[in-house]
Length: 290
Ligand SMILES: C[S@@+](CC[C@H](N)C(=O)[O-])C[C@H]1O[C@@H](n2cnc3c(N)ncnc32)[C@H](O)[C@@H]1O
Image (cartoon, rainbow, N blue to C red; front, side, top):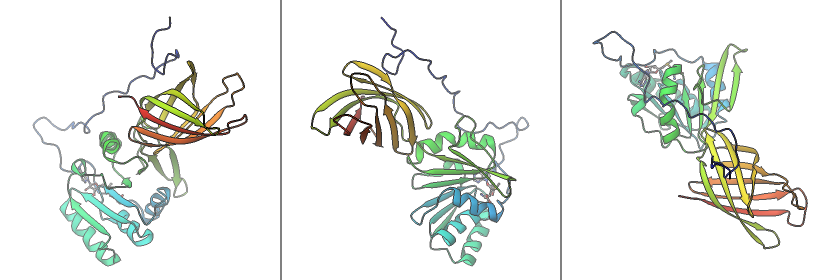
């Protein structure tokens, strides 16, 4: 009998768990000294790079941009002025917030932007659809659990110059003739665990299956059990709430099927397209097992 190792009973190498996430970057100042109020000094992003950041986010009018550590407000002001988006700038420095408000008035966008004097680790990010960062590597890493918890799947994060260590970006964009680098992520839906799944074929027949996914950020592995047979899913891809995967050829005249699904909490719905065979369109509905 095979040992139960996850992803149904298919033996495979499991991913190494991540080191414990730090709630916040460690403070290594002199003994007895308190943490400085600012985690990062004010260094503005060049205006051309601001345009590239908003372009990399594929910004739309319906977006709400949060710039964490907003400096003079240039990112959210540009988002409002040139894309018609709404923006919120957070900065711990009162003088910075004052200059943001003056700059927003000059740009004529006061109705679409808001500036809050606050520690960025205390900000509520739940309404943001785009988050921009120009901080420092350890501050990005400290922010990572908050971004994953508070942002909705599909939200985009653009960081000027700094990565998030082992949360690998979906895209890296070089700008300003290669002198600057932007890291881009899309927050993935959580699909970790086992899902009870019903597949409906286009001739009306139904088939029950169990799907199991293991997930680290946007990287997902999956396996399925249909009619007692277990197979690894191929070409598994997670993009925000969209999960796609291929159920490969399983012999017995079955065609490989490519599924595209929408994930909403513990419910997944989608459809599959078979390369050949009688049933070429399939409907998938799945619910996560508790
Ligand atoms: C490098 S500047 C970036 C400014 C702006 N985002 C840009 O790209 O032009 C970082 C800003 O973060 C602010 N900041 C530093 N630590 C902060 C904290 N804990 N909470 C909120 N703002 C912070 C600083 O005051 C500074 O204005």
